[in-house]
Image (cartoon, rainbow, N blue to C red):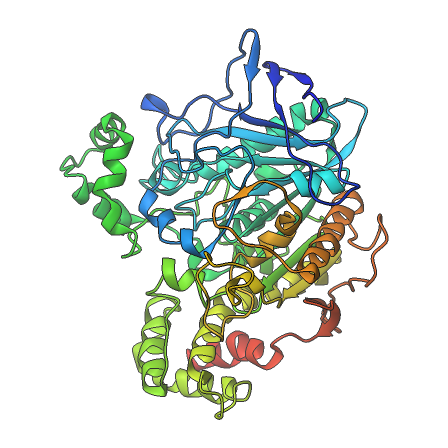
Length: 551
């Protein structure tokens, strides 16, 4: 294992560590620089404030251990531990939490100013409530391709999105401003790690994909990135961005026993509380969805993204957008059961679908029964009466479509229609470790109706089937899955280099551009193939038929 070079950046010198090499023989040595501060600790008086640039340090910073994850409800992460596996090549404490969390981790094969490699800037998911940089290991993505990968932490939940209102001193979205500062840090320092600051691709999954969409719409982020990839998330989803969080504010103040009414007194009290006490006393609010998340602040988010998209206010960069085939069938049923519901009978489907339409899609009570009859008539065309899992499949698709596929397709159509290169994918691969004990005895087995679940694409984006190192849950991958990972990472690296997933390293199957007239997309499975007009009739129903009923 080669010795990791010391890197000098604006704030001081940094010592990293050498990673294990990925399995393929052609894999290069990857160096990891973990936990580099990009902002001052957002604690005490800096809690709920926008990030401030960090100070310089003397000597050599030992950037050898993964930084703690942002403060969050640790129990929420434990709820999905049995559903996922992550590579932990140095046996580090990935579950460690700290309010002092504003760090970046950089992976590179050549920390030289002259390397000029494209940069991939990953934004983690977690519904803006949980998550962190730990677990996103780039030993394969960097080792097999000449790219530099940057993974920042950003604040989540109340610590990252607390707001008292748009016109107050606390308009919210600190977590998004963290992402901006980490992008600025990348622009100013990435050349020292071998990266090209003029070729930065932002990409992310779930809330990370929503974040990418928000950066595409925000004037604040212009010039800090040059391409964008969104995995299972779109910012133009109506309910994901709100105009205010008055209900959440009241719920948090009540849970924390804060009776002050003056904003100055409220903030002073909140800043004095230990971070863990805030987490412990507000745990019950998460399942009720009394939470802080993205808000229209008039600065970073100037208007709801759905309106900005319609008006064409998007950064003109090449874009990849996509979803998985059964986003709401497993993982999200565990973390958000009120939204991603289960139903084994027609009666259960109607009852739970009605609640979903009223609570999450804001349909009028007097219109919802008529809307559901329309939904049922359209969806039954795609699900056979002879299928014993028909109503489970319909429940998964019914929720996944409006929350993932429909907004993603809408964004792709308008981005492409505005003349920007756009590529769409639909991942369908069923991973063997979730169904076959020969591939894993530790991974919880999925129901048959779950095909490619929320977050499955991350395994292939980072090349987990090709990685060396301990896994949080033991599993192995098939030869087909290893090959699919090679193919998928090749598309990503090509896109990062050129803005076209087909240009760069040779690909076996050309990924067609997504355009309004043909709507061609890449169907990602074994084998990969081209397809078109994804969920076309269901898309028309959500975009035209159902809105017309509301008029």
